[in-house]
Amino acid sequence: QVQLVESGGGLVQAGGSLRLSCAASISIFSINAMGWYRQAPGKQRDGVATITSLGDTHYADSVKGRFTISRDNAKNMVYLQMNSLKPEDTAVYYCAVVRTRGFYGVDYWGKGTLVTVSS
Image (cartoon, helix red, strand yellow):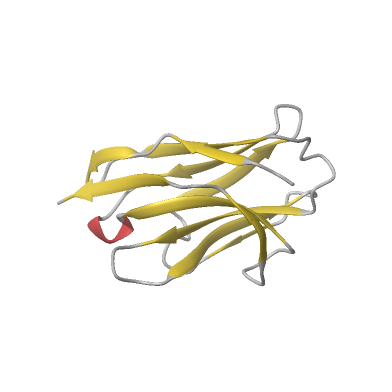
């Protein structure tokens, strides 16, 4: 069992930046891949970014060039740097243990952190 706790969400104006953090309850050194998903009001949960243990990353088209995922195995942390935020980025963001690079399945979810982008 892995517990994931997200932090760093909040209210930001369009064009601004936020950095989300995800703390894992176990060592992530041996976890193949970690990721971020998001769910906007009234919509399904969609993948945002994933990163493997080798540092290979994958991004949804909607965030490419604006978001950056990273991981610190020594601290058991995963991060999502979000720049040039848009109102359509408003959502609850979830950290996840994922099965592989890309959006092909999730083994564990965090409880989420809310990001609100005002226009």
